[in-house]
Amino acid sequence: MRATLELTEELIRRASVTPEDAGCMDLVASRLVPLGVRCEWLNFGDTKNLWLRRGDQAPLLVLLGHTDVVPPGAREDWLSPPFEPVIRDGMLYGRGAADMKSGVAAMVTALEAFVAEYPNHRGSVAVMLTSDEEGAATDGVVKVVETLQARGEAIDWCLIGEPSSFDVLGDVIRVGRRGSLCGVLRVFGVQGHVAYPDKVVNPIHRFAPALLELTAEQWDQGNEFFPPTSFQVSNIHSGTGAENVVPGRLEALFNFRFSTAITEDEIKRRVAAILDNYGLNYELSWRLSGAPFLTSRPELREAVQDALEKVVGFRARPDTGGGTSDGRFIAPTGAQVVELGVLNGTIHKVNEHVAVADIERLSEIYRQVLVNLLA
Image (tube, rainbow, N blue to C red; front, top):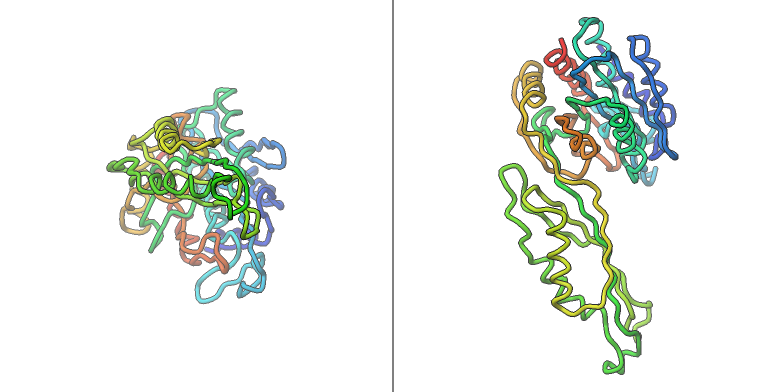
């Protein structure tokens, strides 16, 4: 059976660099509407969102994915054109092969197989797709969830096809994610000639000891589900470009990946206390990209683990690592969220690829999850 592979190849051929969809969702809709699935477009701004639902009753299982991909980078660095799928040595190459067009294809073929076997399944199943996961994520799943909540459509379980596996398919599932809190700090000084230090205030010098303390701070100890909170500076800019001018300002961008052992408000309070302790003249703005979440209730987790045992012969290691995902918009509704997908070793890289054998196995796993929950 090559149905999932062939659909993955068709999706890769569509150059859907975020926020473009390039016809991916139309292709998915054409496959699923004949199954009795209702098709609804929930587009916002430049973002396309597709909501495909079969059934009206609870419980509702949502298969969540995205059709957008990151830019491929320099074409000459690829062994083959990034949007022309090529199989070499059992691997399918192409931008989005792992993140996450194989996951989307597996969801489609799994649902096709499930409906063929269980046309009168209990509850409802839906596929939610967005073209805004790799970008700003402001007009994608977050807006779809708001729409669903406004009309009373409650999600019970959400299975996300993000590439979660490390060494072999299904060895890791994500059962939560750390929060992501971004900060933009501007430290102000007094610009002037380097030869007259008494007439200047160097913001780089003033910020340096505060930065040292921020990087050395133990924000929390983590817990059994999450590693300790981490602080990372991503950009620092200061200076005019001249070697004889003390700059008048410094701008730093930083990020906290934080656990459930600390709150957003506590992070903000402690950062401000450190900056104030050094008497800095500063401005600080914050943006919460997503709060931490954890799926602790067992139904979806056990359905996924049981499916893995049946298809690949082992249970996964539950994990909360990695970056953010669209699960951060689903979990606050009270839904259980689990992420399961192919290996993530080449995502966002040149020559992104996925094992051909894993593509069909992933579809089998998803079908078994559907059986476990809705048959």
